[in-house]
Length: 133
Image (cartoon, rainbow, N blue to C red; front, top):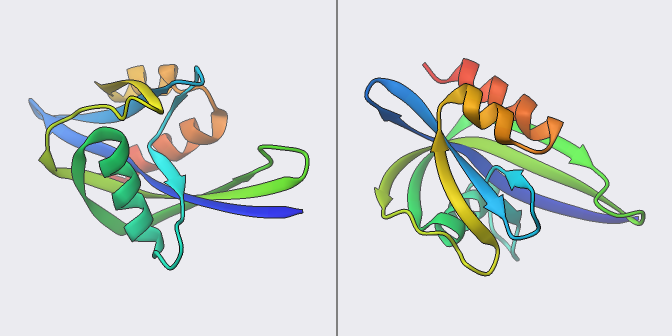
């Protein structure tokens, strides 16, 4: 059994006093939170920051005291762990990575929850929303 690991974050910003969450519409058709595979000797946080920057052109401050791990089987012969943190935007101009991401949205919590494709992502978003003060 092949073991895979990805890291990402529930990315948010505050707009007009309301939390807005970043959702990606992936080229493969599903709606997701930003994440990607760990490369070489990267830490989980380095991976999350790099992937978010690559996929969205946004820089984030990672809150590592929020750490959620989901595990699933993307293929018959593999098992994958995805580690999610919380990321608050601190810079950059939003632009999607055209090779992987069709569109990027900032949505209110309920809209983001409705749009996400996978139940695991929805559960992480709910926990992150409760965690963010």
